Image (cartoon, one colour):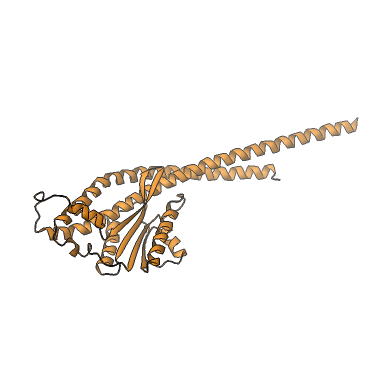
Amino acid sequence: MATLQDIRRRIRSVSNTQKITKAMELVAASRLRRAQARIEALRPYADSMQQLMLDVAAATPNAYDQPLLARRDVTRVAVIAIAGDRGLAGAFNASVVRRSLEIARESRRQGNEVSWLAVGRRGASSLRFRRQEISQAYTGITDRPTYADAQAIAERVAALYAEGEVDRVVMVYNHFISPLQQRLDEVELLPVPETALAGAEAVKIEGSYEYEPDVTEVLKELIPAYLEIQVYRALLESTASEHGARMTAMRNASENAGVLIDDYTLKMNRARQAAITQEILEVVAGADALQ
């Protein structure tokens, strides 16, 4: 049975832990506000950019002749797993790694080779622990990703696809819905999904735009920019999701620490009362013995 000193020591330990989790919750909440503002500002632009690219593709003869739109039999798949650089964020990192591994297993069952691009130290270390060979890792960027970070990732996957080293690129990340809710998204980055292009082909845009120098050259410039925006959006979504998940996890940890402190305090009071009662009984027994 724990002594009063042991219980007091445990209460102090849990109280110190609670102070840390509350501080981390406040830091995560502060960073979340900035990250949320960034992604909410980018979403309309990203949606417009995607629609513009699809409209131009619909007006381009032989759009599939573009290297990044070319479709071929899939034998090599690249998986981009976007996780975080730090932990203590609930299931944020684990869910990305788990879904990415499921995609890899399914691709290998179909006879395809899989290559990895990992964003975030936690994702990269988890994949290496599971003996996955990572061709490229991007770390130290998840707290505040920049457009240059997205460009570097987009240029890498574009080069892999254009050179025929991969035939399909899938990106897995957490989509930010609210501070309390994130959704795991799986996006086929390359080639652009056929359903999207098919939908764009049905749009009557003749006369809507004037292309200079010509529509093919415009599309050639738009596709890399579209790719960069898609990656940048995923990075910002993931960052906001990470801060939201960490804020929620730290709040839950603080509440659990409070419950634990209450339990220990109750045990301490009971132990102290038992000690006082025992001392009174000993005094009474000693007095009786002297009579």
